[in-house]
Structure formats: structure tokens, C-alpha cells
Image (cartoon, rainbow over all chains, first blue to last red; front, side, top):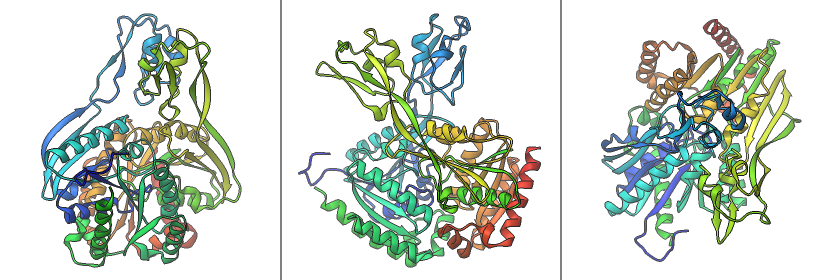
Length: 296
Length: 285
């Protein structure tokens, strides 16, 4: 935990969902517009979407390397197959490396009797800093098929903290990746408050439970909101009751609203429009921002 | 034929397409394997509600330090790419949740003070439901080793049957683990700027794996006509045929929300998904 006591310390909100497509970016894009004084971050390094809503001017691009990769020096390789025997991941056949299977552990490099495999730095993606009308944005793109998403998320988050200090902003609003794996675990680091956006579907409810379990494992302060709550009122009520019974706060319900789809199609935050979803998201933000302020 | 259903963006309808496609074939008497490789958030089984299933643990190896032999030289900690070992106060500590199970520490310990134990990273579950052999993986909450659970699910596929793989969202390592080597990658997208953006990334990923690609566009409607045009233009330019368009419909959404399959409720969708499979067969041939 970050030491408390300073009113001016940077506080970070992470929006996640478990299941994809429940409305994380819809909610976070609107929070960005409502806050006006936050640093904005997209930790979905597979498929960053927040920037599409924010029309950014990119101010910096940095290559991301991650772990170095093994390379075979062909002149030295004698096809003895020691590398094949030691690799647990089935990623190397007598010096021929399958980079999709390789974990970059380096065991082949250490085992090769001929010194024929070496580590090499590779560019696995980029991260970007940008200015938007709502504040600075940090996001990234891992190249298709690449690994080390958790390391890239950590880089993005580190850069966001630096930007917050440089620009004297005290709130970081972070759009998380779907799922509960490596990039989500990395996204949770140093976060003060987690907002889970779910939807009243059997899939949304199932994934919410695993996401709550992950968040609690990292002892994070947690709030839940239900998007498109009126597409299945029974499930909305069940989710609400069970979350509350487990001591969690369900702080908002966003109605199904065709204006959301229209705003997204136009690449604009929903709160720019009038409409019932926009009203609900404004109410959600006032609760979330009050909660962030109240955190010591 | 082995088909992977994937998408860059989450929530576009992968599970809807994979489950309905599998059910449509099974209803016609075809032998179908449905593999849910979204092991972080597996959902396919929710639409079949199996009452009984078999379950097997998936393990990864982790170091076990023999403190009677270890002299805390620190070689293991220095060379671990994943920082899963550290020497603190003259003692080697292990961090199993960071370990990828490469075995390097045990193999290269100069004192032979490291052996290996097993750690559970998830389960593979199998059930026979509605004529489908359903397999799904479930990663343990908090593990980063989802790829190994995905591999364990894929090992259950019988390539002599019709195999449908439901892949995790994204464009990087877990998705690649789920789709590499299939006969065709079926990408599900939606007519929004996000859907198109992530479709482009997913096509790039599939092409880098040298997989043929086809597309399903979900939630098309009048308000999305402009974006639908853009998605179709992109698909045409990139030689990725659109095999099915699914309209935006509150009724269909509500059916899914409650865990029901369209092919069981609507004759039209039984026909549409059967037709989709025959179009996929033509693409593969």
C-alpha cells in the first residue's frame, strides 16, 4: 500500500470487467470527459480503444522490448538437439526456434554446449504519450502475436505516474484489459480503487465472480456497476443482491440506451449527449470521484 | 475441420457464434468438439448447463529449495528470467506465482539444491451435452500461466470430428495459443470504430500465423449502417469474406443474456448457423 497522509497524493482508478464488451471504455471515456483533470491510461495493450474516443495528438512514441529472445547463431549450431531436450515449452528443434511457443526463459542458451544460442533484444510493441482535450493519455500497442503484455502494462503505468507528477494531476483513470490474466494482474498494481463494469447476462455474472475473486486477492477497494441493467432485470437484481450480501457496493445501474451505440459509432464520449445512459454515468462519476477523494 | 472463433475486441459475440454453431451441427447429428479456450473467463458451458463433468488439474513445475544443501550462491535468482527466486538474508525465497516452470534453476544449480514440485494452475473440464463433446479450461484465479491451460484444452480435440474453438479476446499470446494451426480463423466483429480497429489487428495476427480468415459481423442495424459499410469495405480489400451478418436485436440479446441458444429457440438461426458451417467448409476447401 502507498503511505497515506498526504492530501495531494496521486490516486488511481482502474476499470475492469472480466468479460469483454461490457462497457469499460464507454464508462472510462465519459469519466475522462467529466473529470477534466486526470491522466488517462489504457492498459488494454492487445487492443487499445480508449484513444479512438479521445482524438489524441501523439507527443511521444517509445519502443517496448520486454524480455530478450533467444537467437541461434547458425555457424555455431551443430544440430546436436540438446536445446530440444531441455526446452519445456517445445519451442526449439535443434536450433530452430518457434517464437510463438518460446517463453524466453534462456534455458536453451545456458544448455547449448557450443554457445550457439544468444539473447537478442527485439521490439515487441510501442507505447505512446499523447494530449487529448480531456488531459494527457498514455497507451500502448503490443504487436500481434507477441508476449510480455504484463511488462508492457507496467511500463505504461509507470509512465502515467510520471506524467501525473509532471502535469501536477492527482487522479489517474485507467481502462483495463478484459480477462483476469497477466495484463489484468499487472494493471492492478498500485491501484487505489477498482470499478467493475458488468452486465446482466449469464456470462457477465460468471465473469464478475472471478474478477471479484482476483480483485479481493490483491486486497483492492472495489465497486461494481451494472451496464444495460434493464436487458435482464432478474439477473440485475440477483447480481445486486449477491454482491451486497458479500459486502460489495453496487453503485450504479446504466440503462440500455441506443444513444450509447450512436455516440460510440461517432467516436464521442456518451456524456456529451443527453439521454438516460449519460445521466446514469454522471451519477456514477460523482460517487466514484467522491470515493477517490475520501481515500487517505 | 478445425475452426477457431476469435476477435481482437472482447464482447463482440465469439461465445454466441461458437456455441450456436456447435449446437446447430449437433442438432443435425454431426460429431462436434467444442473447446472453450477463453480459460480466464470460460462461458460456453453456461449455455449447455452440464449436470456432470470430468475435471483434471493442470500443473506447472516450481522450484523446491533443499535448505540443507543450498549455500545461497544466488545463481538461480540471477538467471531466472521471471524473477521467481530471490536471495534474502542468506536464504533463497521462491515466488511460485511468477514461475513459468522452465526448470532452469533446478537444472543449473551448482549445488544440486533445487528439485521441482507441482503447482496447480487450473483445470480442464469435459462434459457431453446435447450431442457435443464440450471441453473448457479454467485458469486458477491469480495465475499468469494461461497458455499452458489453453494447450491442455486443445489436447482434447479430436481432429477427425468437427472442432470449434472459442478463443480468448485479444491479439497476443493467449489468443495465439488458442488459434495456431487451425484450418480457419473466424473473426467476430461489430460495426463500431472499436470493432473495425480491433478486427484489423486480429486479421494481422491471423495472417502472421498464416491462417485463412473469414468474418462474422454482429449487431448490425440502421444506426450502424455507415460503420457496417466501412467494415465490409475493409473485408473486401483484405480478401476476408463476411460469411454472416447478425442484426442488433434486443430479443436476441435477451436470449443470450439468459443463457439460451438461438438455434434452440429460432428455426431461422438453426438454418443460418448450418449455412455458416457449409460456407466455412467451402473456404477451407
